Length: 302
Image (cartoon, rainbow, N blue to C red; front, side, top):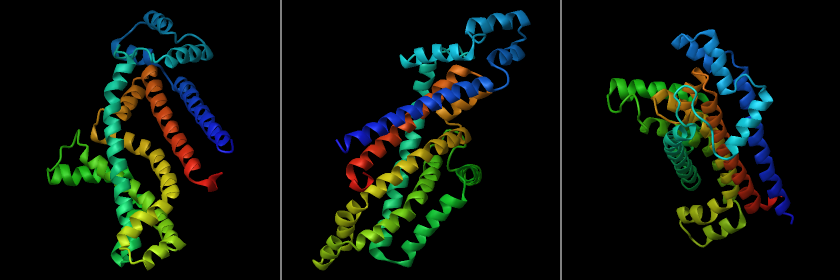
C-alpha cells in the first residue's frame, strides 16, 4: 500500500499534465492571428462569402469551448479529423511521420547512453587524465554547443565541403549530434555517482578479492548507480523531443517536427493539435514510466 498510492498518484499526475498540455495547445492555436480560411483565401482568391461558408462548414464559427469539446470527443476515439489544407486524414499523416521521429529519437538515445556509460565507467576504472578530460569535454559540449548550431556546422563540413553525406534526409548526423548532447547531460553526474559507489563496502570487498576493475564496475558499481542513471535517462528523454524536432526541420526529415512546422505555417489546426497531442502524451508517458520505475527500485524516493 505504501508503494501503490505514490505510483497511482504519479500516473494520475501524468494524465493531468497531458490533458493540460493538449487544452493549452488548442486554445493557443486559436489565439494565433488568422486561420486556415484566411490562408486559403490569400492563396486561392476566395470571396468573402465563400470564406464565411467555409468557416461554417469547418466549425470555426462556433465558440471555442464547443470546438474543444467536439474535437476532444473525436480525438479520444482516435479520430483526429481531416487536414484542412491537404484534405487527408490526419491519422495517416501521423502514421507516415512517426516512424521517422521514432528512429531518430531511439538512435540518438542509444548513442547517448552508450557513450556516457563507456566514458563514465572508463573514468572510474582507469582513473586516467584522458578519461577525466573526456568527461569534462563531453559535458562542456552539451552546455556550450546548441544542437542547431552543431547541425548547421555538420552540414557545412560533411555535406558541402567533404560531400560524405547528403544535405537532406540523412539520419547519421542528427543521431550523432543529439547523441553527443544527451551523453554530455548524463556523463558528469553519472561519473560523480560512480565515484561514490566505488567507496561502498561491497565494492571494496570485491576489490580485495582481486576482481578486475571492469568486472567490479559492471557487476557492482553500475547496479549501485542504477537509480541515478534511471533518473538521468528521464531527463534526457524529456530534452530529446525538442532536439529531435529541431533536427528534423534542419535536415529535411519528414517527421513529426516538419509536419508540425508546416501545419503552423498553414494554420492547419487538426494537424497541429494531433502532432502536439502525440508528442505530449508520449513525453508524459515516458516521464511517468521512469518516475514509477524510480520509485519501485529506489526505496529512498518513498
